[in-house]
Image 1 (cartoon, helix red, strand yellow):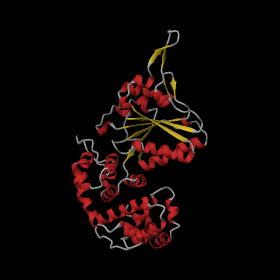
Image 2: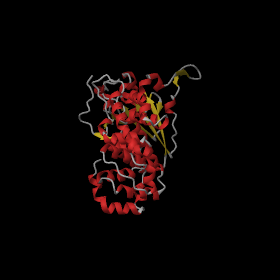
Image 3: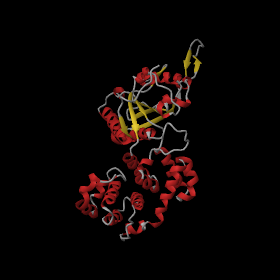
Image 4: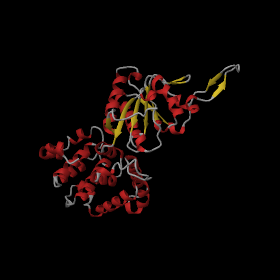
Length: 372
């Protein structure tokens, strides 16, 4: 069997993927075209790059843009067998024929104000007998006698064979039924999502300082713990939910991203003890700006987190913008760009703040040439 190669398929960051697929699905739905106008999509990429997160964000975008309710059915095909997809056989009423009980994944709302999304995750890790059962779902939107409703989008995802994760070569007959996209890591796209999602400011600050640590997966090693967008979200959950002390949480952090990265993260966390008071900055005071690059990254990420938590207090945010005028210009620009990520439409709110208007006059031309 020939191996499906990814050398001739487009690569997209998570952010670009959400934009392109989200806009495409919204156009189809708003123009009342059949959902199957869009081919079923196959997302390829290394573990933890953000494929699953992208699907959820595409669903959110469809819901926000079309006004329809979007129901996502997440199916991990690695845990399925062909019987799970087709259903359990039983006899008909007169005991003469076998009928198949419909699997739960086909229990979808077919009403016109709903969009269903069937996400077939880990399809490349599924045994080929299960992949074969996915043939009908991806093209014919059926399995046996069960049919998906007309309002159902189908997206599949899996790791590449070269990632040395559990992955079987996809048969070309199945591959030809899909629209293929390779998902690549992008720090800028991840940072925008991280700010809006409340990822811990120490994680954002560290990765702003060393963005190459966002994705540390290497298929040619046997490491069990390594850095990926998914594992950094786990670190954020530990710091937000258990204890924000990096030194105290170090053993747990090392178990998620690996000891090498965790050691550097722990060392970098020491800059926080010398940062100026974030409260004072937003109160309108003007504490001394730190000089070191690592401290400036920590300061900007802390200010963005504070601003997100107080996003309706535009007076305080105006005070922080005035303080940013005393920061090195490139970090001032990074701060204001990150403020614009706080929520959709937040730039328009900032435009009403006098300090932002003054900042735009002084440094607005630097926005397109910022360090990030």
